[in-house]
Length: 125
Image (cartoon, rainbow, N blue to C red; front, side, top):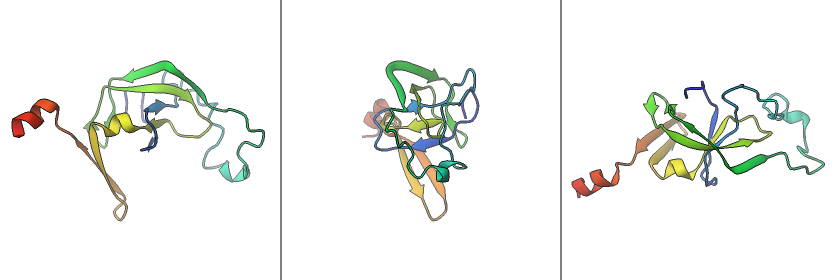
């Protein structure tokens, strides 16, 4: 949950950056052409091999509220992208640097634990 509404996020340990694929001002998602309803219609997603991703490393957006399951992780900075996949945001390694994540596949639950800041770690040592 953000100040712009709910985001459908993907945790990606292979992504260096966290990326926002949704325009939170206009809510226009016309660039998301592949979704769970039509993905089966595209056995070859991009036969012309066109670059369908728009990315500018300087185009960022800070979300002051970034809440997962009632736990606040904001503020959080995202690089803004336009990807054809129907995912609102990709949470990358920047998030994993400050948060330990446990995935319980059996119970379909994800647990988030924020690492204590450096001062807290020093005080506890």
